[in-house]
Image (cartoon, rainbow, N blue to C red; front, side, top):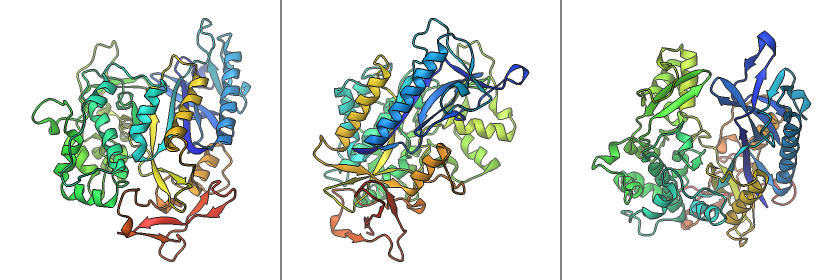
Length: 485
């Protein structure tokens, strides 16, 4: 078994800080203070302090051996946290295996046993065509909350899409993309708010939606781009979204709250449903819910202007907190805050995982990176990790009928080496896509096979692809099927 799986275990009752005495200060989010071969422990925002989170190194584990190694390191670290946290006294991070100097941890109160009781989230690279089956399998296994404050799952199952103009039989990829798009529209239509966008979305796409639209069969892309009204109708038909002008309403109708570094303010994002759907389906698509889609490669003042375009401050909610006006911050701090307002949603941009099925040799199936956020937290987290991992495998292997491997890439290997502190190369920007040494995306199954052709990727006009995986048990070059149509 091989697949890209990531793990996050957050415990908001712990505190990490840097320095001591008068030099004590909070630790910025994502700064690691424990680093091991497969994972790290890093800081997480908790208003005016920093909580802790165990995170697997990117891009996630690839095979069963890596999974076992990751679980062992996580278990060892959790055991150490329970041991040293039992007294509720602060202790240095160096007491933990892989801990860094000058960091200190403050455990929860003494009456919390065990000391480390995390909230689990997991990520996986999943082909678009299998997204509906993933939801069904997670519900069947009982590892996700299927009811919630927004009746999210019930609405998703009840409000079915209608026919799509110009497409008699939608591909499995289009069906999967529509399920994900519609789940966002349903989540954004709830009457209750939450702290952030990503807390509303049970299955959050880390790959942006413009990239996912580009993963559809080419003929479906052509039809939907030429007739965007049919695309918008496909996404919204059957959804109980209210008013006749519902397309002009925001994707998310909630008031959200920013709480970090002692700052607090309520706000809304006015990006409309129509703008979001149209932009992802353009030839040079953009996901307007993501920072990358809104601001692209813009910098400084231009980036600030792009990111704040749809952000509106809202009336103060019933919180006994002083409200900060973020637009009065200096440019550097304002930009940081605006980036965080779009945190998580499509944050990986064009980055996808790749899967190779043994019954389709030489073909790289792109897999969108999803974060599963509604896992049941009343199940022991160690058991839950394994059950979710097994669900992922059952879905990707289609019930064990199709043997597969995840394709490791040079870019992914470098990211993991960097995270684990073992990098021996000059630092490079983290980007997805073929230009970073990843396989080129082929035409999804059910596309237009008559236009496909086999091509060795090291021909003069193709990019060289080195696949780091265990496809044959050793490092080799992988021929990848492309569609040039």
